[in-house]
Amino acid sequence: MSKLKLGPLPDEKPVKATVDIPAAVYRELTAYAEAHAADTGGSPVPPEKLLVPMAIQLMATDRGFRRWLAQRK
Image (tube, rainbow, N blue to C red; front, side, top):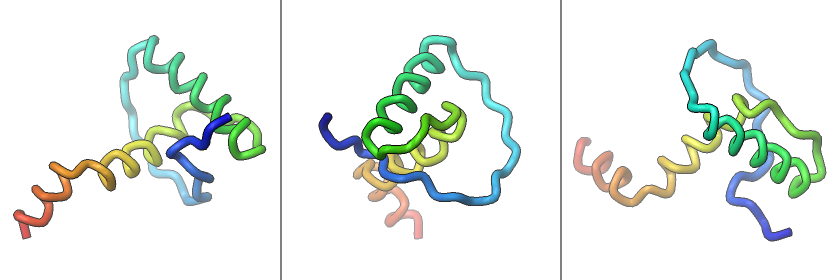
């Protein structure tokens, strides 16, 4: 299997947040959790635990967002 962009998940204290996710997105997150477990050799994590690392990865690699942040300072 090819390497996924999302690496090992950090073990941090969770913060409570409520988000409504479309069922199709939840199914994809569940599938991604399975692929991530296979890729890292771990157990699948609950799909909700993928949301923050995925958002962090997206924001870190989004060039437009990075430019916007740099201009904002």
